[in-house]
Image (cartoon, rainbow, N blue to C red; front, side, top):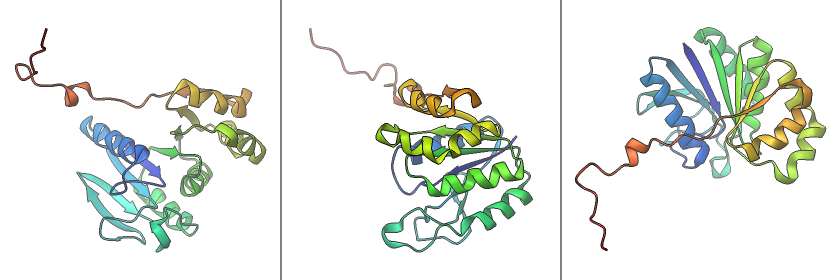
Length: 194
């Protein structure tokens, strides 16, 4: 399967979404899928404007603008994104949302307008912004259009489910932890004192 992962933020910027999306990409590649990331985050040397680089074996399309503080915003990205998604032969788009995710919102509009099957994971707590998202109406519209919604915890999913209502279901897709990666090798664990 060819999967487009779309996120405002990605490596080399560090944070929860950035790391989770990268780990998801590498795990999917490890299972035999072809994965491409689209982001509004510049590369480690300021690459932007559609530049494609590799981050630990993951192809990353840098649709960033030159903005103060390297803000991951690009209102000009939808045209380039549409072209690259259309020519890329993608089977599915997986959007990664935060409370403020203008690039991801644009990506969702592009993917759904193209009829590309779309999944969306919310990595945030809406908190006081729930009424804003409800009034804007686009989250419910996306669910109505078939976007498969998920959130990283039950607590994060609850307000989204209230917004989506009967238009769809918000599933819980918890952030994964690779316990083998964090485990101390056998025989190297420190002895406990009694």
